[in-house]
Length: 105
Image (tube, rainbow, N blue to C red):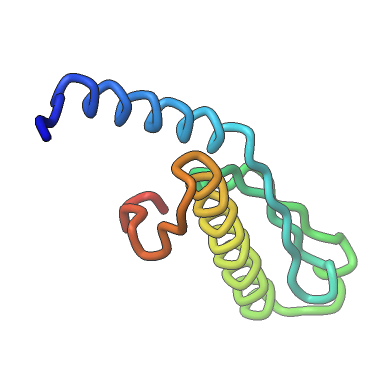
């Protein structure tokens, strides 16, 4: 059986392009502090928005706000990574857990 490197390369490019397009469509949202801090991210783990309930400024200190932001941002990035893995599995047809590049997020 002879491998056609050109066809393999073209298929890899197709998968990469399809995956890139899928990542652009992914949007995840999460919150911390009972919804007081909300964070949205895209499929590449980029933070798209951060919303902070104004009541949080009246009731909490800066350290707590910073902790809530960290929790919400990390959760948004984890959700985005999980969605990216699902999309890649749809494209290639098998699970890729642990195979996505670590620098994706």
